[in-house]
Amino acid sequence: MKRIMPVFLAFTLSLCLAACSNSREPSSQSVISNEQNGIQQSQSNILIAYAPAEDGDCIAQTAALLQEAVGGDLFQIEEEADGDFAVYEFILLGFDTENSTLPEHIQEFLKTNQFGAKTIIPFVSGSENDSDAIFSAISQLQPGALLGESALLFTADTREQEITEWAQGLNLSDQAFVPESDGGNTVATALVTPEVQQVLYLWEEDNAPAVTEYTQNNGAYSDEPDFRPYITSFPVPDGTAVKGAVLICPGGAFQFRSDQPEGVDVAEALSALGYQSFVVDYRLRPYTQQEGALDLARAVRFVRAHAEEYGIAEDDIAVMGFSAGGILSGEMLLNFDGQVNGTALDPDYVPDQLDEISADAAACGMIYSFYGRLSVGTTDVELLRSGNLPPTFYCYGTRDPFYEQFLANADAAEEAGVAVERLQLDDMPHGFGASGDWIPAYDEWLSEVFAANEGRM
Image (cartoon, rainbow, N blue to C red; front, side, top):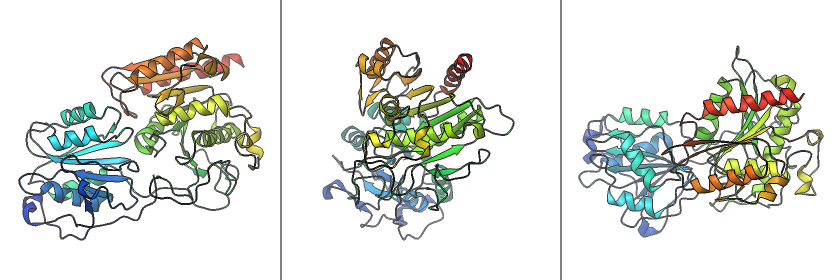
């Protein structure tokens, strides 16, 4: 996620939404309709899109209240409303309805715009509404989107404090958390402390291998030009036996990183099971898939270099990714593992001691993902065979728009001699993150892979 300067609205708050009819209104500077063909953006990763209610204006006022709680940009949905929403990671979607039916404006908005890999979180006024039914209806129109863990269902009697607390409980932020910029806060220089969480830059300043020259953000990119990729550790709790290490790459179509549902949540679950877990915040567009893959390779080298401190065997390191993060993992395993370092991409890169460490991984987790490139899973058996790929765990839902590609890619990998494990989640859409009860099966599979490593020693 990126740095922003939040734009807050100056409103006089009422004690409850029962007074909606004469309280807050979004300012004209904060709301742009489709008639103006865009949004006045505050460089936020949060969009609060809403269709005003026919009776009263509680939806608009709630949207303004949510903006005060979490930041973000407001967008009023009108007939045939569309816009450029590429930079947003979270879509808070507001409307008024009964019996969990999506209004026509909302249906058209979801059909018209592409929210694949973005997280949609509804806030809905009205009666006889059900969260699960609303999420299901949204998923039918946006099967490639992630869905929030909870919807806000409210009425005119709902207190503003309840809405604010719900919004704050979403743990959304338009502020990026990055390591402190001091000389000893990189994977090559920091003192490793496995018992506590660390956030470390992956490359020394001005020495990250790159072919992309990125100096100015025109508003189309999630990260600013000064972004430096980093790794966050999630230690195994005291008293839990350490099984190995897992490096996790969140998805986001290479436009952003879904760090919470596909990073932090997964890392916390896996660390509780005995895996030293690491979330990799790799480079996004305009950088290439190859540049991001080198970030992951650097992270693998760091973990292997400190295997003893982390209490793992050097071979017991897995990589995994969600959607674009899985594609990135595959790119690294196909082209940038082993002793391949940044000079393979950038001749001006200056190797260091970490580059002497192997970037091999013992296993790969493809969670609604595949070997290939964005939206295109490869079926080139010879390409997959040439990569000498490790055992690969595929997990996907039957309602995922890429379902057939997952099957074809897994088939091709299997034909190429890769040890493939498949877990199909019936009626599950894209973007389920840590939910779906797939982690126990992944844990069992990965434990067996690591145990096989010990048998070869």
